Structures are given as C-alpha cells and as structure tokens.
Amino acid sequence: MTDLDGFFDRLDPDMCVVTATADGERAGCLVGFASQCSMRPRRFVVWLSKANRTYRVARSAHCLAVHLLTREKRGLAELFGGETGDEVDKFARVAWHEGHGGAAVLADAAAWFVGTVLHRTDGGDHVGFVLDPVRWGEGPGGPLLRLSDALPIEAGHPVE
Image 1: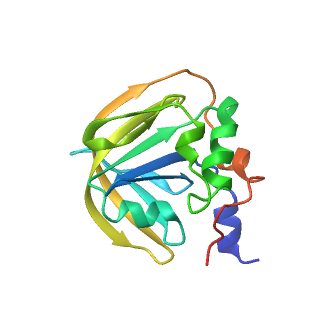
Image 2: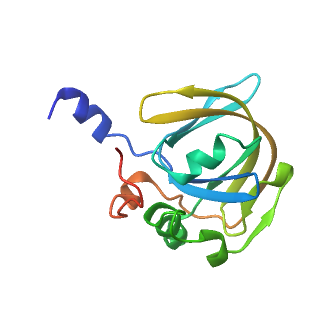
C-alpha cells in the first residue's frame, strides 16, 4: 500500500446511477466517480468504465441521466452495480419514465438530472462524460448512498 492508496481510501463520495439511451438500447450502472466540474456554467462529469455496457450505449447517447440514491434504496444500487446489462434487463425490474432527450429516469431516485453530453474525455479505464444539466427533479429525502455503503456490492463487470 502506498501513501496515495491511503488518500483514496479516505474518500467516501456519494454514489449515483447513470442511465444512457441510444439507438433503441437502454443501459445503466452504479457510478462512484462523479462530480460537479464547473460553477459557471454549471457542468457535471460522470466517469463510466470502458468495461460496462452502459459505456458502450453512452458513446452514442446525446443525454445521460444521473440519479442519487438514498441508503434505503440500496437494492437499486445492487441491481445497477451488481448485475450486467449484457445479461439482465435492469429496466424491467424498476419503475422509470422517459425524460428529456429519451433519457431513462428512475422513479425511486432521491434526486436526478438529465444532462446533454458536451464532451467525452479518456481517463484510462474510464471515460468522463461532461454534462450540461437541462432537466431535474427530486424524490424522497434521506441520507444518500455513499461509496462505503456500496463496497459489499460485487461489480457486474470488474475493472479490466
């Protein structure tokens, strides 16, 4: 273990589910790398693993939806983080509706936004999608699901 590992081990970001829709396909995954990246104009970046089906769909998507989950919705995190869309239709198991630009918006999210994809940037094993939020909403309140809450979830696709 290096000193840098210790730094990263201390981080405990909010987790989110990112959904993508393109060319008649829907996909979604649990994401731990996401952040506001500009104040004026407001911008947000989500980092999707190149190993995930969500990344493959998102490459052609014009919009992505980003959803915050409360801790009590851990089942959603397990579905979107522990299952792969290569084998399971995750959207058949959850309530959702079509949002701006055809984005799939999860009904049980604590908060969500749909953002237009402005840029994609390669960061190694993940690609960052810089988003311009255009529609948003809020759901039930409560403590948000954090990385430490999601650690026991075995990833549907391991990092390659």
